[in-house]
Length: 407
Ligand code: SF4
View (cartoon, rainbow, N blue to C red):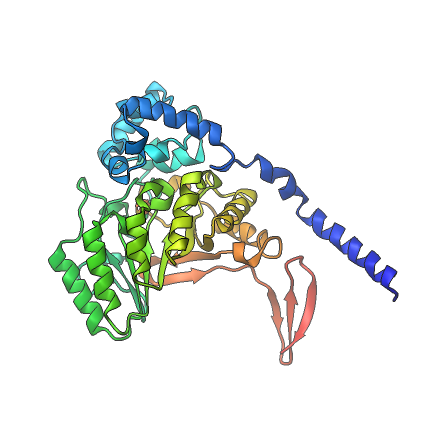
């Protein structure tokens, strides 16, 4: 075969590849992100700033954002166009399930569209009243060897340092922990957690989470990081926080200076939709990366928010652009009051099928079902092995082509 013939084959193949993502190429520009829908966000921000009568400086201060979370329907109705029915429903649901929205996160919402994916994650919905699911499907209470710690795996564990979050997400798996009060773990309990970790030499990976790990005070966080850092068998520290999404103002210079002192720190956050990727979120990610923090994302597959192959692909690609590596897509858990977000596992599989091969491997997280009763993360993968034989395996590739491979 001469060079010309080889080039002709290559060009034909390039066209086939291009055609294979044609539907996404057409759709992707219509999927709004927080970086392309700037006009709406700016307009919303101006309106909210007026409602609160605050300065830009206050708006950019995470403590202001936190202490001014929107928790009453009167204020919310000055920010979003709510019908009388919605107002009544929010009031009713608020008596059963707590809600709070940072003014920043409210600025990402479409004020006129109740199906806006940002709004659905934050504003209570009447569907929460449907009594399905359990309060604690992960049976976390049975995997807590000491108060504040959950240990489900041999070499790692989580410390839940607070029940507080910048926003109370409507799909939260730990909504049972969100009492009417925001509570940090008392210092004596935190000391016992550190003591437990110190005595357990198999623990090489500690995840600080909550609630939201970054809602404890600077002083407490510094104390905890320095204590863990001194334990020889703790090799890595992880932080679980949604603040880069719901309150990116929390990522301050002081916080980054603190985190940079205790490498390696892996910070996993929770973006669910491309609209959450804003200038502020990008700035927060840039600051964390510059501090040497390694960033990952744990999305939750949610009906009406990201249960769409194109939206999920766009989310993962946009995350990579701001240096956040897609890590997991969690199938939603059977948590009471969150049944309206449930999707079928087939939908998750369809999304995974449409990622592998069709976009960079870096943009492909692992799809996980959390086995009930705390039995652990179970990866769910499309099946690429069709038949096992003694000396060979029958496989299929991302395009569905079948081939044999020697075993
Ligand atoms: S930030 Fe995380 S822990 Fe807090 S309410 Fe949202 S999902 Fe739950």
